[in-house]
Length: 174
Image (cartoon, rainbow, N blue to C red; front, side):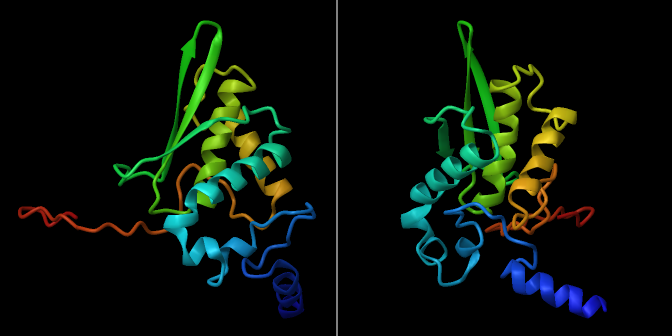
């Protein structure tokens, strides 16, 4: 019986094995395909991809409460993290900047960082860098709205391909 359930979920869920959302125009599943233009031409299409992802997430998860023109920066210096959200205040207004590494899963990292931005900009949480209850509620909502996405967690669960590996001569730690 469990085999039938698994094959039914895979048939519904496409490549992730998870059910797909019912949102018209959602392209999250197709961008993971090896034939996707975002996969085959990532360097040329990454700005378009992040823009489309941001618009989709903002409308479906955050009810268009995040700014349309959020600053999203590709940061080549990010080697130990996939991304981060920073913020600053200008008068009574808060602004967020999302930094992304172009070496990692943009689809998953962007929504993680948008949860931080929502804590700060929508809920005015001063400690929006934490992964506290408010951030976790946004993360859980991501899975409810887009079940085809991996669960949004505090840490990513995939390998990062580093160009170099350093090893200590004394303890052999890498």
